Image (cartoon, rainbow, N blue to C red; front, side, top):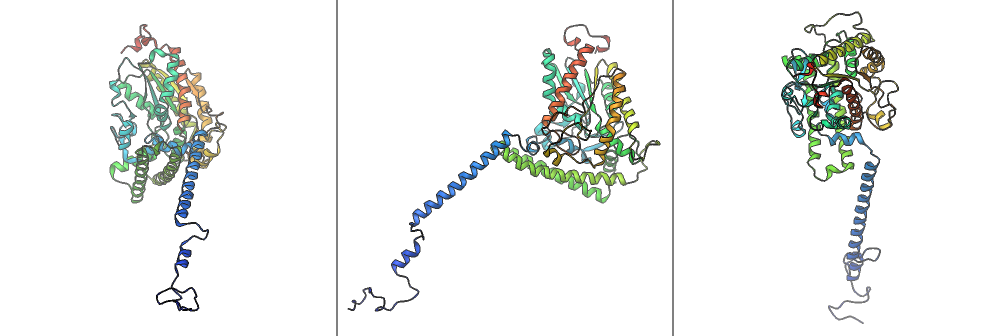
Length: 484
């Protein structure tokens, strides 16, 4: 039977058709998923799968966040962004000759009133003496305050700034009456070594700066920087050669082309690190995430390591140059492999004795601390994180510390025998398995600075009590030497 014209046929063999055309049933079949679901059901299923994937990812991120916080994982990376100006300020200053100027007595000094975006945010800037401090002019300190002044290099500065609260609490536990008058003030400058601390203390006292307790935290710079200089023929009595000569050359415009390029690249990296930290600091929610801090800090530390490597290259180039324009003294030990360890230890001991004498003449007490360092034998069990980020025993500074600290320890015993309040704290981290060291030089994380500062605070209270230096604050008549 033939279908009427215009009517579809149920017999394919009776009706010619285009092989490429699809019938309604075949079109519907092609648009339907293979599993037989409708398009809307398929879309719902895909949406559910996507939501499940997002939920699983968020759950995984939450687990990672909780684990990092609970186990205090990746602490170095997190601290690299938690403290925009302070966490890595120790090494930021070193090698950054652009912010140093020539000083007529101390060799070099940070530029007075030097200020950057970061120092403004953290209220840390170089004061009129070139010292990183919240006190713009130490001569203006209230005579009624009890001032604990911290001297030394970058570790001493870190202790004064990042360990300040721990030190303060340790002192107030014994002397709560100082709650309103106790001030812990930084007088330490990165890269300084004896006798630069001695010269700075003399300068401050001559100009009438009031200090009640002088705390000198040093040792590493003397033996590492001074030893490296001595092995290259530069007398360790004088400021570290790289800081000194680079500062002179920047001031005189006599840097080589390669030194200029290295300095520019270091500054570029430092600026990039600063901007990276600032960016995270401006993210209101993400900046509080431990996971984000760890990831962000990994990038920051990678840039930091690159900058340090360039600074070492710049230092090596400066050290390899011959310069006859800067005065130095001859000594039989200069140029020897041992780097004049005995001479350095004696200069260190005598400088400390002179600081004690100056402090005593001004009516202040004096406390000298030998700082801890990871390369001192048996000083700390280094964990996996520290071995990866804070351990390079083959570096010249590391080798100098390992072989030179015994000389300092022996000289410290003589200091103590002569009546100085000397304390060897090189083993203070000996029982600590947790991460404390955060770079291959000598610097600590917040936890390390707090441990050191707390112990120094305890020693300060002992020293002050022994010398009755608190008498003026407790109502008794001050000794004649304490009159201001």
